[in-house]
Image 1 (tube, one colour):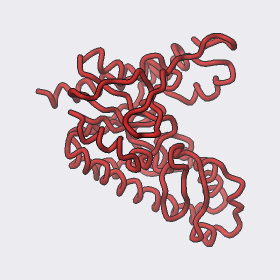
Image 2 (image 1 turned 135 degrees about the vertical axis):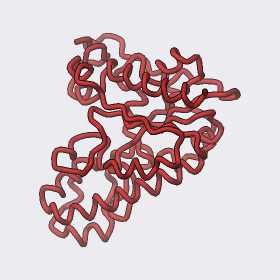
Image 3 (image 1 turned 90 degrees about the horizontal axis):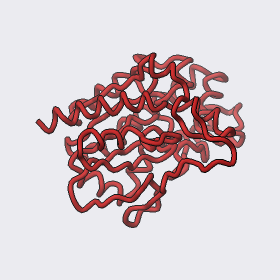
Image 4 (image 1 turned 120 degrees about the vertical axis):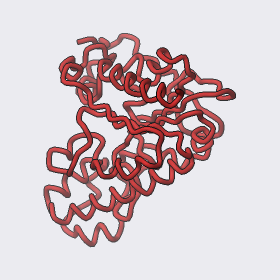
Length: 276
């Protein structure tokens, strides 16, 4: 295992901004005046604890300008609600859009933070009516809140799952409409897309994503790429990751450099087919 000792220099993400956006991205800042491939996604695209995340590997292997617009803990809303990001996606030669969790977006039942989409802000009146026994002031993160609801009232919890899945599908269709058929949709995770949500799936990413949801988008994108990290990659644990002692639990929940190599290979193959 490779990790950063306490007091040693941390991994420099060279945070930067584009245009009038208030969002912070992994740098260094890139020139967007020419052709580029835009990578939109969450912590995996950003490459938290990873010196060379998969967008950088794709650039090295293809020679294409690959710009990392990943945001830690992002959901779809953070991109849809940012005019600069929508323009960036529209101008890109191709746009690699990571499949993000369905829990990280505003819906009829609850609201999330506008930039940190994993953060739970408040429950709607509808949610409070359906789950009268729940004190929603106890929750700060959507995952914690949804896990509690699944335990307290599993039948009513399915109403929330149905809502966030439909909201996710609608938002993805909105985003993909702006990209107009130039999107590559990778599902980058430690498992293939779920056939049906089950109790164990509540702890995995991307949260709430079932295969039918991805299939429904297939006609709107140039390529769907399933990137389930191999057992060999997963067995390497945190090898090659850079983090301090306090961050070790978080790092163990992230995909490692070996998994990023596999994701890059799948995206490179998709780009090669499209460029042909």
